[in-house]
Length: 228
Image 1 (cartoon, rainbow, N blue to C red):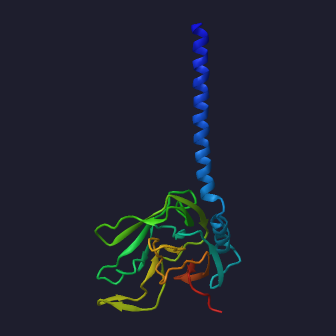
Image 2: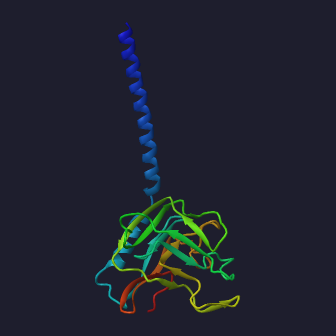
């Protein structure tokens, strides 16, 4: 009798454990689906990086292309030697203070970015962490999807012409350092990429180019129209 009772308890425990595991698997599956289902961003990143990596895209070439982003999503490029990307002038109300205040995003510890230039789309929770004392405000992303770039990214990309403010000489300010950033901002809390007003378009037109600096070739990507 006790043996049958023990077997029944064991069978019940197996059923409970199976239900728990099934519940966990469903939740994980729902999370994965919520990240990827209905989003064109990963495919758009694939197409974008393939265009930059195209061996027929020679030095001096430039052309218009697109990135497709879901609401409050970002594509961020990181140069080969960078540990973080910075956007000087992204904090629109403070960018011309005596100190150069900037957003920063740490380079993801992904194989596609290890000792390589890369472009990543932030698929989830793109945001700015609470402000602290100092010049930087750190950006956060819970889930990246990254692809390697075969050509390094220029160390700085200007977003505007010369400006001076508060006695500070800012010849290429605002600007991106060690990468680039495209953002679909649909709320005031979404971090800006330095463009004013922020871009809320799902399909964002950008210009990609191969540039020569000191005999070294670099990729560039700017939220501007290519020269005809």
